[in-house]
Length: 237
Image (tube, rainbow, N blue to C red):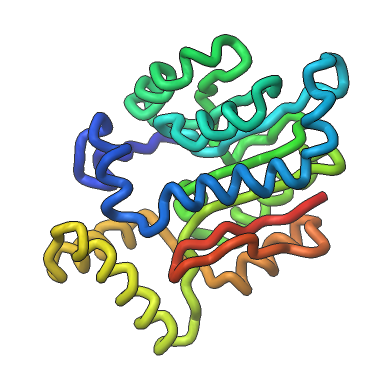
């Protein structure tokens, strides 16, 4: 299985961290909300995670890319072992450089997010899992996550969701387009981005995501935060 962010976004990986913020509304807020909810769920164990042994936290970032979310998690959990999974070699090279200051406790791992996960306390992702176009495959990924999580544990995913209602979907895409246009793009360019992304991405509705999470074992899926299409959702075990 291979993936190239350069081909998908049509820009150099070295520019990813700058350009993604012109394409994705509230990108940094999604990171902040993911970290906040992980901290909320894992707060009791976070206070004792420096003692080693079974109390040490393990967190996995699926589709870790350039390591931006991973670094934010590492700052919040200074004693956790963190793995950032990805299969894009160029993205991982940037990620390794960014994460080097955290030493051996934070590492990039060349693995697909469709593979089984080791036992862990939190699984996070941001702008990654929309590459799973088949809902049954997504349920399998969510099942892997649920089975890997210790209790209390959390899965927090930041991604785009889209209503199945045509009018709501149109209004949501319009908000997204207006954000990109505020960053200097023409309407034609925004529509071309959507057309390009549609070849590899699929944005399910939040209701579909909740149903997939329930099928995977999360009894009470949650929407932790939302702004237009951008949503932080998941579940607590």
